[in-house]
Each structure stands twice: as C-alpha cells, then as structure tokens.
Image (cartoon, rainbow, N blue to C red; front, side):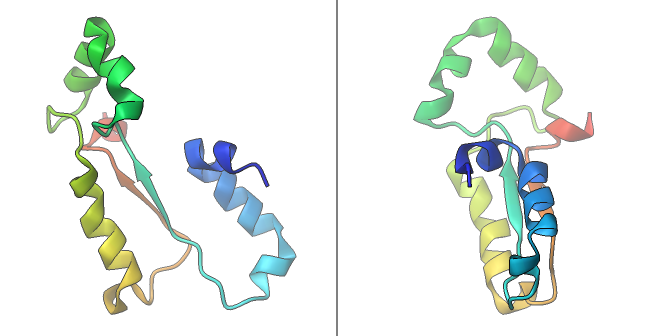
Length: 100
C-alpha cells in the first residue's frame, strides 16, 4: 500500500478499503480525519509565501490557519464510545475551506 497517496487523498483510501474484500470481512471500521491547512513545520513554506498564504486565509471562513489541537476533538470523538456507530466517514477539519 502506498500510504503517502492515502494521506493526501482520503477518497483514494476509502476507495481502496471499499475494493478490498479482505478488509470488508473483518470487524475493522474505517474513519478518516482530513485536515485542512494546519500550522506545522510541513506548511511553513506556504505560510512564508505571501500570496499563497493570503489565498488560503481568504478562502478559509474561520480566517486563520488550523492548529494541531483543532484536530483533537474530532479524533477523540471518533475514538470514543460516542463514535461507536459512525462508520466509513471522512471528517473534514479545515475551517470551512472546502465549503467555499
């Protein structure tokens, strides 16, 4: 499996899981958290590039970069008892970026 592709394309991961009959016959459940633009070392290049950062912030309704802590709530929810009946979902945590 090429994890890099799946990390950057959650829908590719879901298609892979859907097609893999071995995974469908287990008790495994697949939930994904798809982060938007999160302020980390990996995104420093975008943040340091004035035009790209401006485009990202203008398109993000919340108007700021995400922080790693912004992902904690959805992850805790999906891993807790309250997420037991949720399956096959992609939870987008992007400050509304994809909604625009």
